[in-house]
Length: 347
View (cartoon, rainbow, N blue to C red):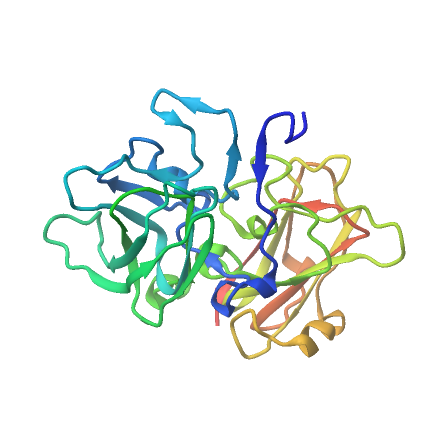
């Protein structure tokens, strides 16, 4: 059925140039899909806190109601009558530094909070009454049905957030853009997935990402369905598709996994991987480096792929290029890949 038949309204995706630098190709540490948790909330009468952490963009379904009233895609508290305000505690997917936030009130119009503020802490377990909180974002005005991008220049590592809304209302999504913290002592001398999102791996650029959710290419676990991964449109002309990724930590790769889970009639015929040491970790490598990536050294030569299969490449299949910081996955000519893993040791 069409969205119109379902009375379902979607917002168009924000374009990259509509976002601040801290939100472009960034890791959302408050992603439920990466493991972020709803710890507690003062009130969840109309909509549960966990819904605010979902990876999907919020939707509005005109005629959908539940036992508590209008169904809303986010966290929504009841109307306060006795003073005070509502707040929620969120455990980040992994501890990390925070560069900024997106407080998204999409579809909350007469029921959005007029203001919010954000605090954080570093805690081994979930916070308690003795936990000391640090304010990262002071009181901010909120508008209905809007994105609110709020920068954060505190360089400390945080594990939990306390999100205050004043006095009550609903927020569709809270996104926390940051960088996972990797304790050097915890990874020394052992193989890790150098490209995993939870280790700081990020998307830099791609030729096409028409279908699916491309940032899930580096997510934990296998894909849940065909929409859980990177998929390009059908290529009708010459050439092939590609995606460039930044490792979370500079390292030497000894094993690569290309997983085409759930991609059957639309998996790539073959793939290859190129790699380079740019002497930096991050996504802002510049247009010149992106344009020249087709000349990067080959780490994995042209390999045939199969439908819905974990392809494990290791040993002499992986060219020893020494420490690298960025890779380019080429797929021929187009199609979908659920997950990409690059195992090795930090340099």
